Image (cartoon, rainbow, N blue to C red; front, side, top):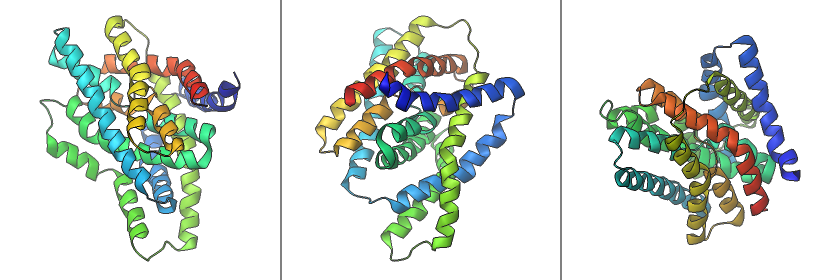
Length: 298
């Protein structure tokens, strides 16, 4: 109960604020998302990588990210083949289980649970997940519709890509960001997490409960909330990670399905109702599962 009150509840209250605003005012989410995507989040990414000490731990994070993705995709493919499911069903399973909400859910949870040091790792993992979603998420959402060129275009159009490259430039060269400009970036970066949390609450308010394909939804819920953190735990044992980084990655891997994937599924008309239902159910259930996981890790 202590962990729930100290870590999970503050995050839920901000989600609830976004949910209430959307139910009350029916706000157009797109302009708010544009501010988060093109201004606040790039500032946060630049700030994090500009100030971070890029050591071997970040290399382990990259290996972990792709290994976790590969493991989840393989599990879905094996299960789909064993149960004689269609390729479309398999793609829906992958979309709803292989991509977690590491940004507007995972990062604030980790900030409350592990402080600024853990938060720096969480933001770095969020960037990795953004890149992965814009490659593999696009591929499985648009299978047969869009090719590698579309995925590459998505990555190139991501503002966080340029924020990351600019931060790495300052890390690798003797140049430094002028203090007055860095102060402006710090101010905008501080707004990033509250904005994306409110956006998630607004997105949840737009999702509708309906007739679910409960067997498939239950399968995806189990993979996303239980199997994914177990795989993450196993991967952290295989690498000499900092204990804090290991905890951050395990908690991040236990996050609900990514809301961004819902938008991709809608855009390419690839089972949007199913992906939305899994995102909604995993988000609700994660209130309990994340609280329990944090208690176990602590």
